[in-house]
Structures are given as C-alpha cells and as structure tokens.
Image 1: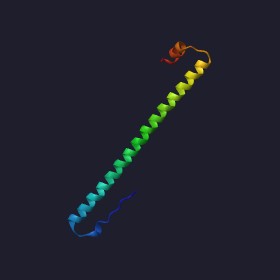
Image 2: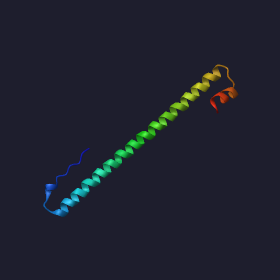
Image 3: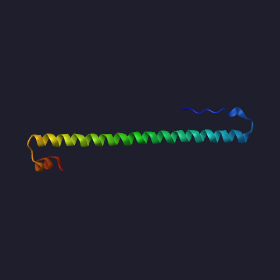
Image 4: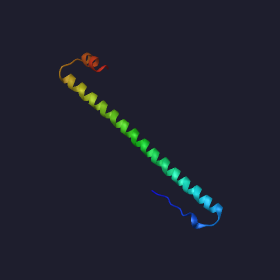
Length: 80
C-alpha cells in the first residue's frame, strides 16, 4: 500500500508540515503492521515445526512399541 500526498496543496508552511507529519505517521504505522505480521508468521512457523517434531516422535515411539521394545528400552534410546 502506498501513501502519496501532494505537498503542493497549499503555500502555507504549517499546512505542508502537517501533511508531511501525517504521511510519516501513516508510513510508520504501515511499517509497524508489516513487522507485526512477519513476527506472527515466524511464531506460527516455529509452532508448526514443534508440532511436527512431536508428532514424528510419537510415531517413532509407536513403531518401537509395535516392534516389541519395552518402555524402558524406548526411554533409554530416545533419552526420555
């Protein structure tokens, strides 16, 4: 999203300055929102990776049980 304000709206210095501050404020707000969005995406990605690892570990434990290993052997192998 682009904010473009024409500064030729007025010859009044105060009005031009207010317009510049408003534009800066809008750009800062858009930058903050973009940063928050990216942080949220990164947090979601990290949580997904953790869930994937937990699911993979559970599948491995299940396969080891089916192969006849005891809980003690599984714990020792997986450092539980």
